[in-house]
Image 1 (cartoon, helix red, strand yellow):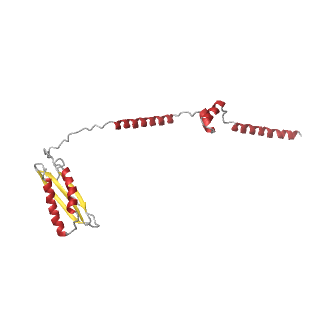
Image 2 (cartoon, helix red, strand yellow):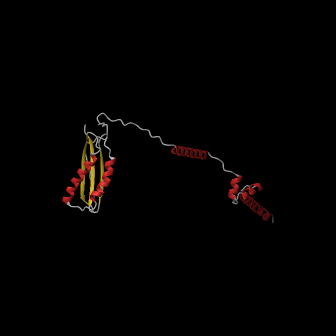
Image 3 (cartoon, rainbow, N blue to C red):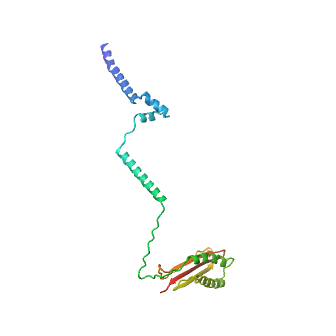
Amino acid sequence: MDRRRVSLVPARVTEKRMSISTRGRTNSIPLLSKATIELARLKGRASLGNVLSEAHPPSFTFSGLLVAKRLTKNLKERTALRITAKKPAVTKIINEQVPPFCSSPPQKFCTFPVQRFLEEYLPDKLKGVSYGPALAGRLAKEMSEEIKEFAKVDLPPRYKLVCIVTLGERSNEDALLTSRALWDSHADTFVSHCYENGTVFCAASIFAVYCE
């Protein structure tokens, strides 16, 4: 009988220790006051996680402060850019310095009227025209002379005009037209326009070159 009593003692102690550890794990959540639960109920936060967050707010870390500082800096920069965009832009005019080896004409050739003329002239001239080798050569020469006559009306002194009109048959092939010449970007200029209908394509270019 004594041996049985002695053997039962460690078992009861073990059961008691297990119940204590289980109770400790169950009661690891801190007790909430009635005021905290009432505050969570009034705010509509019925979940236990929200209640715990209200009772125990998170602590701030150094990395979190750096992130918040960076976000604040970006917000200030965006606000400054938004304010600057609302202000009227001030255009600063800088006089272009012409190199000594370039020409400096007192009046430059104006390309805007010639550009508008080409945009209206080519469709009217080639409307309903069908391609033919003999017709294309004669028509290209005639169009070149008419374009030069219009550009000469407002031509500044000492400018020379060179007009090139390319007229060809429109088909499935592509055509690439290029020009190459010695050029003075401070005095020389050009105007170009392209047009095509069902059977014909045309590219007209006129170059205004300043001669000293």
